[in-house]
Amino acid sequence: MQAEAAAALYRLMTWLSPSFPVGAFSYSSGIEWAVEGGDIGDAVSLQAWLTSMLMDGAGFCDSVFVAHAHRAASAGDLRRLAGIAELASAFVPSRERQLETSTQGKAFVETARAAWNCGQLDGLIASCGDAIVYPVAVGIVSAAHAVPIEPVVQAFLHAVVSNWISAGARLVPLGQTECQRLLARLEPAVTATAGRALAASLDNLGSATFRADVAGMRHEAQYTRLFRS
Image (tube, rainbow, N blue to C red):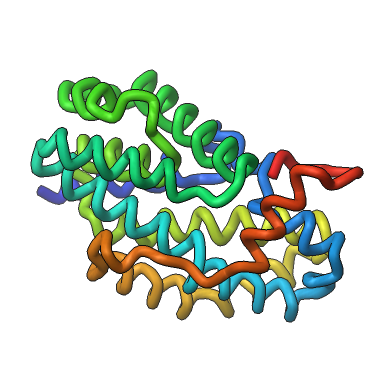
């Protein structure tokens, strides 16, 4: 059992590491427009923006999809899994955010299959058709390898928030130490959001980050861009 737990932790750390090739570094989830528009200009305003995205927007919703995809895949409920994948794909509020999550989902699945394929994975992926966005991909792959759901959701949120901070660091800009302080200050919000997501039903899905959604849409027409979203 100890060896299985160590293997699960190793894989989870690898899959949600910044070095795992899903291309997350090229997306900002609308943060680039928020900096351009003056909503974000320092560490304090970036923290406020990310806390909202995390607790009341994409962070919460995506972690709910991770949890439900994991449970459906673990139970072998392919019909339910397909429905979750379709809903998660439809839940994205803008074209570029759709590109972001679908491209990362595809890369995550392809890389995981190439390096850590297992018997259950092909059937789980096939049941979703083309609608595999990033949080669903994480849920499916981790379930197929029997990685426990609680650390999966926590690690997923840590990876998402870390990428948001990385984008903000390049755009504001911020120093490396300040980024680590910001990550530390967001720890309670990450933990609380993970707990809510694990307890949430699909009926609890919803967001109230209208400005962040608008930022994702306006980024599509931004004149000068460093990021794809």
